[in-house]
Image (cartoon, rainbow, N blue to C red):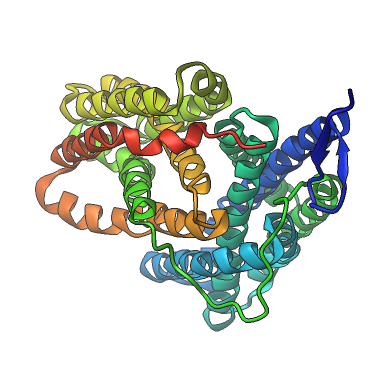
Length: 401
């Protein structure tokens, strides 16, 4: 007997084999979207020293401009739920991707601070908006395939960041920052044209004639957002302050201090590609709880490590745990009954990214007074709180077809 399934666009039924094939194509299309987004962010990193020299700005001004990028990302996220609810995640990913493709080129062309600030705001806004939409699309792929793909999708983001950063350094050194930006734009357009046409979308996107910007009414969404925040604050703190911690408080040289985030991000990337299988086997709640405890123990060990290399190993161990916490939180948010996936994810993403874009500034201020050892000890406590809240992520295991 032929098994019929709803099409990915909600237009007509299709047989189960075709449904499955489209879902598999959609899985790799959304992985390409994560790679695309990470590639653009990674390509910006090697542009920063040239950007600073070219504009003749100080570290303080550079910090303000990078903050403008973060503000742009945060400003766009609440609107994404509205757009996804109206048009579906596939259309929103494609729309933001068009602007993303040219955004780094606009920054590279900016001749002064006055033009660089809006260019960076736009860059942050479209990167952040696409982030929400592609996470919503990954949730839909999980529903269609009845298995987890969120962690490995985030792994593709990390892989894209690695590729963007590595290629950027080589191209800028050989051909200059503008040629690099042009090449990045071309690569982004090619990825978009080839991969994004295979993306799936929600079965029946809601289309109200008079829609408004809405916020989740389910309090559980905000609790899941709090878990995302507590998971991302340690990540942002390792990114921004681990090298300084090892340099100032553990006597590491510059080269050694740089290994702190490299080790942390390396284990995170590996574990994200393994995370979907772990989650499918042990369940989202158990995976989140154990991951949070691993992350906490690594942070605690780093805070009391007697040498820099022990601290680096501790950060690497912590990365194994933290890797899959945010992907599970995003899956849990996107599967809440009675709440639009896009609306829920826009709020959880907004709350989570505060941990990377805002919290590190406050941590740097406090760390300058107390040292960073006690800071990492407190961050271990935040991860323990996530372990205690892990039951709230049980909806991440909901596979609806």
